Every structure is written in structure tokens, then in C-alpha cells.
Length: 367
Image 1 (spheres, rainbow, N blue to C red):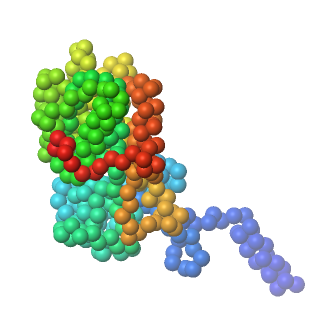
Image 2: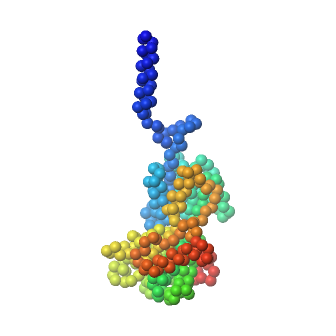
Image 3: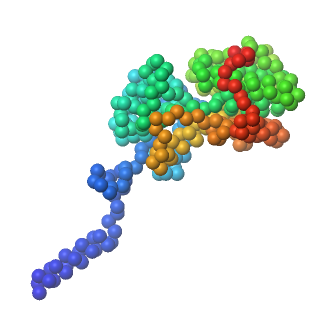
């Protein structure tokens, strides 16, 4: 009888422990045994030149990561290198991987040789390289299965911004300030010029473009330099400047805000993300006419979601364009008339359908 009583007590105890609900271990606490839930994805990012709140490429990438973190309950972290060399980038990527961040997003072409290195050094990690492809310094792409490279049709986005600018101003003069003279920035420039020309030829606008006002500053972080260049253009009668230049563009925005606060009518066309809020100078008024946007946040978010769904497109080079919703101008454009927004939407639809083709090479344009 005592044996049966003891056995009964053991059964009751086991039932109480299992039935009353010991929590299932969280995903990141599981071991390697078959049947364990996969470890929770930890997403990291290494910034390019500039800061995480650069109102441009870094910020757009981080915002996409943060949106995914909120939707999927992920842990995220970004690191800002002490410099912009390959060694600086490799060091911070390694720091993230060592801390368990096995999904790393890197924005900018400067990461190309670094990603070429780490894709082999850390074969169990996944990497998203935005605006570049891995290579060994020879420009021959080598995209391993743990890497996806993403590009954007900047020329298409630039075209829409140029079209919107010309349609809104109707007449006057526009300029362009680029950062480094690299393909993504050049394509913004060429597309913008094509958009202005298209408006002049098809919608009766009269917008002037002088070659001296289409320049590259040479960096992405010279805020003061951007302000000086913008001031010179405005002094020469330029009405709107398309600034595709990171921190240099912030300098141009600052100059435009200063002038607008004094009563001048000057404009900036933003880049990469919707920069309207960055151009506010008083009472909600902004000097940002519109912005040539790239779906940087969308790209980062989509790749994280793909990894979670088991569909990470490793080994591929992807292009986000008009056809797949990867480029455009902001959904809200307070400084554009409704009819301008409608015409730009028509152009975007035509590009998506392939009936309006924007060139991604310079051709006979200003630069």
C-alpha cells in the first residue's frame, strides 16, 4: 500500500509540473537538439559614411530594419565604424556576428570588398548589400549564397522628381548637387535631367538647366560645403536644387531654409527618403518640393521578412524599380499641386508598364 501511495504521489507531482505550464524556452535559448525552435533572428547594421540619422541612406536602411523589428519581434543593433576603409567595415561586421547578429545589412558601395571577404569568413551569417555587389577589387561580382545584392533604378526616381519639379515651377532654373560621382548618384542626375526635358517637351514648361549648376561635391559628409554650393547656385538665380548628396545635401537644405525664413522662394528636391520634415523652417512650411525616393527601407524589410519565411534570395542581384514599387516620390507632397501629383503618377504607371523608358546612361545630357 505504501508503494502504491508513493507511486501515486510521483504521478501527481509530474502532472502538476507539466500540466501547470512550465514556459516553453524562448527561441534564442534553444539548443541543437532536433525539434527545437530556431533561434530568434538578430539583425545588425553597419553604417556607411555619416550617422544613423543622416536623413538619407543610413537612416532609410535603419528605419526598414526597425519596422521589421517591430512587426516580427526582433533584436536589432547598428554599429558605426571609426572610419570608412574595408578594414573598418570588416571589424564592425565581425563584432556583430560575434555578438550573435547573424543577419547583417550594409548600405553603400563602399562595403563591396568587405562583403566579398566576410561572405566567406562567416558562411553561417546572411548579408544584405544595398547599392553594391561583392567583388575582390576587380569589379567582377561574386555573390555567395549567403548574400543578396540590391540595386535601385535611381534614374527612374530622378526622372519623376525632375518631372514634378518642372511641372510645379512651370518656368525658372534648376540645379543639381551630387555627393561622390558614383553610378547611383549619376543616375539620379541623369534621370532628373530627363524628367525636366520631358516636361519641357510634353507639358509646355520652360525650365532651364545650365551645366555649371550640375556639380558633384566629392563627398557625402561635407555639410558646410553643401551649403556653400547651394548659396552660390541660388545667388545665380537657380530656383530649385536636386541634392543627392547625403550630408552635403543637408548643407544645401540648411541654406534653403535660411533663405526661405528671410522671404526668398527657393526649393530643394530631397533624395532617398522623404525629406519634407527636414526642410521645415516655420509653421510647418518646408523648402522640400518633393523627394526622389528609393525604397531603401522596403528593401531592408523585405529581405528580413524573406529570411524569416525561408525564402532569402541568396546569391542574387536584385533591382528595385518602378515595376516592383521600388522607387517613386512621397505619397504626400504638400508643396505639389494635385494635378502635378496626378501627372507624375501617370508617368510612374507608364514606366512600370514599360511604355515610358528612362535611360540609365548619360547620353547627350549635361554631365
